[in-house]
Image (cartoon, rainbow, N blue to C red; front, side, top):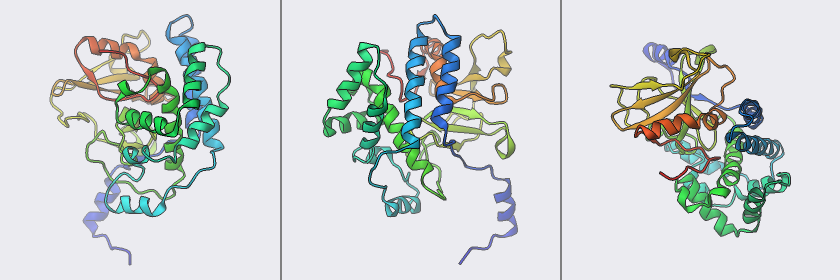
Length: 311
């Protein structure tokens, strides 16, 4: 029997911002297009070849997403049970230990064009030849943030396969109802940490901050001007790279820096760049990470297509 809302509850429900903003079904194509545009702008820069590689990888991700491999469907009863108990229904720490995602890796490896770079060819061959157990170990390490346990050359391809599987499960589950995770930065769908945040600018999402999951690309609402790691608001600062096209307070990308826990999170302001996309924008702004690292701030937001360098 449906519950009846009291007048005060109706007003609260009407004023509450939407908790979820799901990614589009052409997410990986949008990422590829953005990376290809950035690659052209970065021509001659050492980063250009890497952006070209990841743009092509995103194209393959979209192919696999549109034509997914034959695999066992996720247990709907398990998803519903997780929902009832307020747990992430696509929990990365448990599903990575199972093998439902591995057909997505096989499909990605099969559809990836023959690379011209020896290092890329060797990485693909390593993943093709690896045992199911070895792949599983690498995947568990990657979603757990233990990058040192995964060969750096494998990270983009393994991360791409995992992203494709989890995004496909997320968008293939109708009427998904999610609740906030244990921390502000935890994805309510899979429990993975946020990669970045976006400040949306249209319709019912206008002016709201949504964090973007590093794995499944689910977006969830978190109030602005609050550190997503220690949840304090005092003393937050915002840093952007010098850009002749934008004033500092109108930069499409700013890092929200928290002096309390010495961390930061990148924020993309769609009002100033409507086509900004978190993953591609993150990869294109590694200079900002380098500057913040030099200033002693720690990055806690992973990007599964990028193996972090040494400290």
